[in-house]
Image (tube, rainbow, N blue to C red):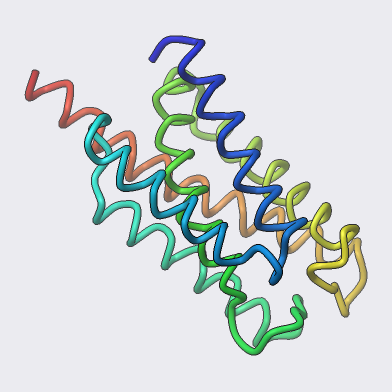
Length: 170
């Protein structure tokens, strides 16, 4: 993937992130439309597979549901907020391109970067008031860091396997 395209995808994902997190419930349906359109267009122009996007997004939402159940996260809504579910779909779409761009990194490095990135994203959400951390910033950040290391490990494995199959079929 060329750098211009990757930068465009990165900027687009950040736009969706801002719509989701800053727009929260007021712009949640815009976030849903943006995420759905992004995935649908990408299915036409990129070799990403819908079943991987859906499966990984559900996995991410299950992590968030577990965090809510165990009192790590508190949102204004019951269950996963609509904007957060849409953001998961947008994120796993974007993660496909991260995997394409940074395939050469060792798995431990990818996992470490994922842990940092995921933690910073949820910390930003907490600072912006869309999620509460009832157990405090430090305890929550440590747990989220470990979870995101695992999430990135899984995402990377799925997308690297998908990429190797795509390269073999060319």
